[in-house]
Length: 359
Image: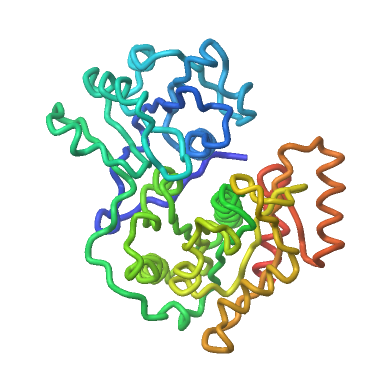
């Protein structure tokens, strides 16, 4: 398992690229390293090609990020921004993705200190930081990821006419592994020599790959058009993996329709967590039975024959909370129930899902 390594983009394509892959990073996770909202920092820790100098979280200071998170990347956990600067960090990534995407008020003093000490900031939350820091040193910058791209237009359904394979990761919940499944499939496709592209649609994927569209920052009228533009830009690839967002059954999620219309996917991969029966943040809502839920996604994508019908080719199951023997038992049980390949791509590899997409 390696870190994500995107292809080198010509300058004309670097619409979002601000972070030099050689820039040493600190991941700011104060009070959040082992919480459910830590997925931004954990995603960067797992996949970024940048050197990670340290993680900042005073609650776990003195520890090793690898031992605490299980992610195979060694770096210390420190208590303060100043320690991160002393270790050589030049930019700091805000490492949480909480519901609502707001910057915690108690983080602002540390962000101010980071800027005053010369660090640049990568901000994936909805609150923009650019207006707060109007006077920066030469070479210093603030990258607000959740900003609507310029020159968007409405969707046209144009991706339906493409001849390549377009895979959309869908889910039974938010924060269920859609980005991870897509990145693991993309990494494996590249290792096999395939011409494959990953379309990031959220702040974590954009921070990792350097490009994409922050779908939850795009006005509704332009949402499908924004996805369509990214997919059409990648039409030269044989395989395009589109990062999913949200879930059809989630009351706070409206992203699925824009993704289906913008990407016009040919294949779907359903992401789910073993043992989960109700939504994690909205526990009074049950997870639907998976087979009819898959069929609903396929039928909504097709709209009674208006668009080509995508086929769900497998499930990406998060088994990280289970010991290996129970994980394998869970995967076999899902396969028996659904009749499709069911794998934990992060834990056991994405080969079977990739084979299902290709064959």
